[in-house]
Length: 398
Ligand SMILES: Cc1ncc(COP(=O)(O)O)c(C=O)c1O
Image 1 (cartoon, helix red, strand yellow):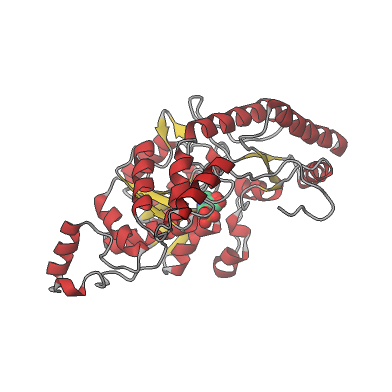
Image 2 (cartoon, rainbow, N blue to C red; image 1 turned 180 degrees about the vertical axis):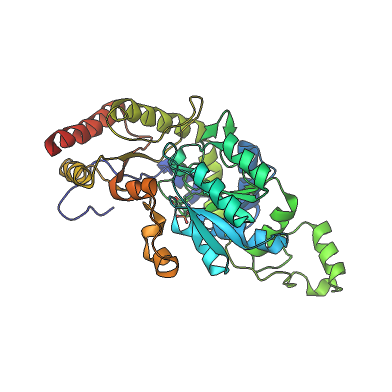
């Protein structure tokens, strides 16, 4: 990986969770000359992930962004939306929101919660009362589980569909329940450096069979081919088409978001490492929190949460202090970056359409937030060293 100009990186923000054994097993499998397009290994990976997560259905696709796209498209295809208004988070990722814009929905941005940095529930309730949106998309920010009891209470009271973007939070849990099991659908990213990786890749999980079947079609052009026989035949009968036209009956206006079986091969192996990866990432997170949490604003969560974070996020007390910390980290070869994408309402894709979204917490995360590395390979002494560099930099800033 290329270093940034002017400094040599010793502690990377993202490391590969695919190891030499995984690659060697993949090479052996490839030597058997298998068909590599989406096939039985994709199904096996989906079933293994559903079983690990505790959801009935999962769909593997080619990225976390595609997983978000699938959730939106399935919801639209379900045909039960009372309106096309959707509450979106200010802290998340552009592709948490992009499908709303692409599909011509009306996204309404919500402030970030001061504890978890997810949706601010007070602001959310104001928006729910004012707009009565059909849908809310939330992000489980950086592996820190959001206040799900309160959010689910609002869901019950206001009756919206909940999409759970768990793309950077796979493996975390809230009161013993895995994140990614709270929404009507939930998305996961398997990009390099995420909790587990298939190089690129994404998953959607759900307990809703109807949404699952819609996603099976939307992932592959909108055709019936990937449905089970009963569902296929029902659709052929409904549309009065003989079986010769199957599998090229396009029921929906879909996409091609398919993964391939070589990626699924890696995914199957990655799930075996989940418990170890969760443990290591959680240990590192707790150590950072113990050292840095006394001095900086860091995400807070319920005491029995499992936090499987891929970076440690913190807020400096000012823009100037963040600059000092970043400079000190660079001198010591510690890779840093902004906190996720900061406030999405301060990015051109948003403000060129809707004007700038500015709110105290989201703005603070944008201007003062940063990430520190949290990889499974980091040892206690590494976390202590990185933390000491951050703390010493703030002394310099005073
Ligand atoms: C919250 C969130 N949503 C969506 C994505 C997109 O995932 P991918 O990079 O796999 O497309 C990311 C990527 O980090 C993310 O953090």
